[in-house]
Image (cartoon, rainbow, N blue to C red; front, side, top):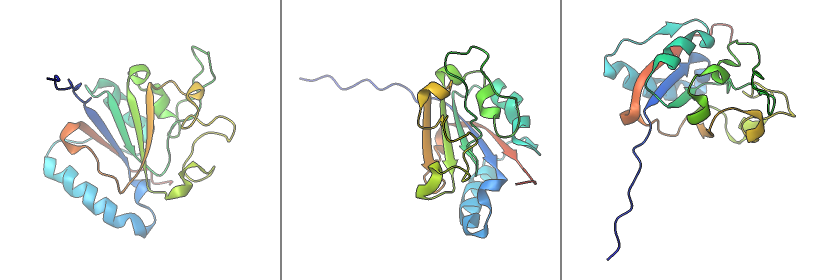
Length: 168
């Protein structure tokens, strides 16, 4: 008789939401669906003007998986082999500064259709250094790309933060 497979517990999730993910209007149904769930939790949620300002909250979280609901991937590239090969910290690179990135999972939950990998449609890197498709240009253990219509793992969400991003 075969033994059942042992499953590893899934990592807790920090859900980061940038309001620019819901612009233009065609994404408003996703906004309503997601924020109904956020409000229903009844927890205190930090709201910041710029996404990089959520970094202290993410770094203090017990999460080891970051789900970023965002128009932009916020994952600027890093140079391979460099210990300090980080770009300057800003709203388009803040994901590179998460303390637990080397053993954590980053999930970009974007509003784009098939063209998510096109420069100018949410990617925050140059065309030659794509950290989403080339592991040598990122410091995360795992990276995934999902469409905003895919389900968020609500049962694993331990913390939530919101960026207003009025310039985007």
